[in-house]
Length: 214
Image (cartoon, rainbow, N blue to C red; front, side, top):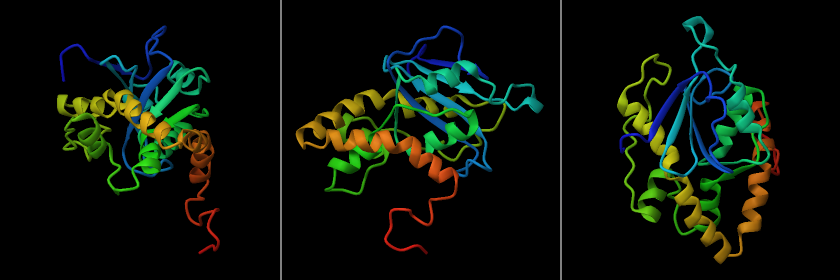
């Protein structure tokens, strides 16, 4: 990643930082259960080639935990669209950890599934390779994100998850418009904060929309 494009903060975004009206957002956690596994990083980009990473340090290690007023303000700002890939998880962990409703949201994974029905490859790595010609490394995907000192490889990986989302969305939005599915996508995006609340309440299984309950 080019020098000067990565900015790392501890506990919160700096006061007065503006990332624009559409902000790419991703998270790194200790695992995939928001009730058990803490939120460690929140990565953001305004689509300008800069990545901004907030490392959330627990109070017992000298940090402020989730006392991050600037980050909370951004995640809940109705004038700022949060652009994510698999937003269902990120919205859930952010809502659970920060105590705010994360909206409005767009999700490139939902967009891809709506229009790329000729394939089952909807991961960020696959989409970046096919639509942008960018080969993302996923080597650090299972890193220990709770470490106090993160490696340069970890930070570069975390940044890569947001640096290409604006360009990816532009490609997918064009296909959604071409296939007359943009309105459907927008309806799915609007439902994501509610879907995340259902997940946090344990309604992943049984599926409320299934005909039968297990």
